[in-house]
Structures are given as C-alpha cells and as structure tokens.
Amino acid sequence: MTQAEIGAELGISQTQVSRLLARILTRLRSDMLAA
Image 1 (cartoon, rainbow, N blue to C red):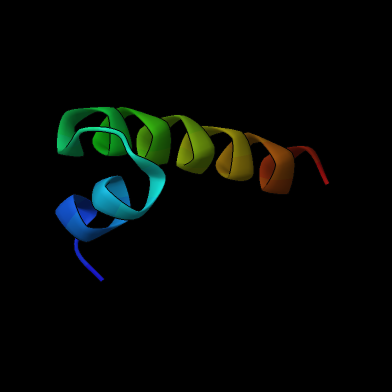
Image 2 (tube, rainbow, N blue to C red):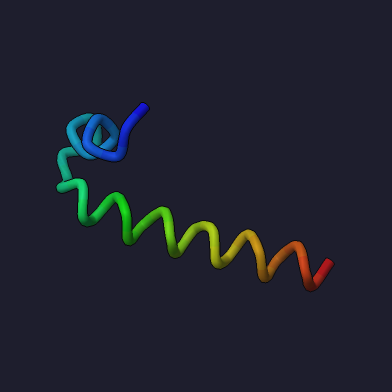
C-alpha cells in the first residue's frame, strides 16, 4: 500500500502520511532502544 493510498483512506495528503510514518518509526525505535 502506497503512502498516497493510505492518505486517501484516511482523508489526508501523502505528505501528511509521510510525516506521520516518520513520527511513528521514531517512537518505535526509541521504545525498542529503551526496552
């Protein structure tokens, strides 16, 4: 599924999807390092 497809599903732009994914990945990474 592309970022554009995800954006269409959520009603947001591909740019917003990209930022959201970056934020999620950053949080996952820090959570894993903290574990």
